[in-house]
Image (cartoon, rainbow, N blue to C red; front, top):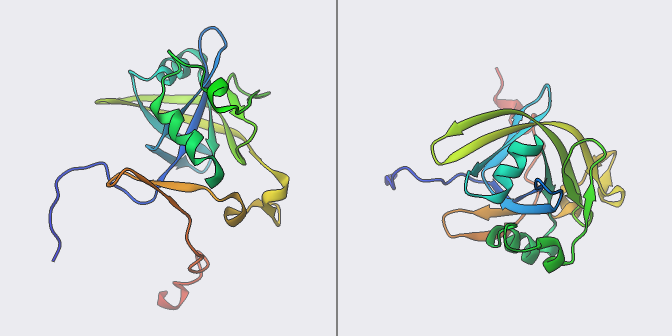
Length: 189
């Protein structure tokens, strides 16, 4: 039997997205955002939801751009820090030793050391209660060349990690279970 636990912000998997922005003075900032995911295939878009109180919220509104940086497991400490500190008060890149790189396509930085980057221009903003839902058109995906297989990013080499909102914990990616659009084929009529 299922037990009702009420309306909560729980869904699995929940990503660990590090959002790169510039402030009004051009200072790079990064924040950890778990509320997000792919929202359209054509044009390719990703959406994130941020509270207006965050420094990055104002940066996205002002610059109309952001990057989504996917950290590997070895950057768990830095990714967590990006969600605890505010760019209003701290230079997060100085504190972590990570390198902001100016995108050639959008007015936002990406993080050199992180293996997978989405460069996004803001195309839609929707107010949703406590959060603003930002949708960015993905203008380019950058991936470390040595972490690719047959021209695509290899999840097992990139080693992204997930956030568990129930217990406020991070988890690694598990083993492959089967091929999408294939393992269920025998149930097709």
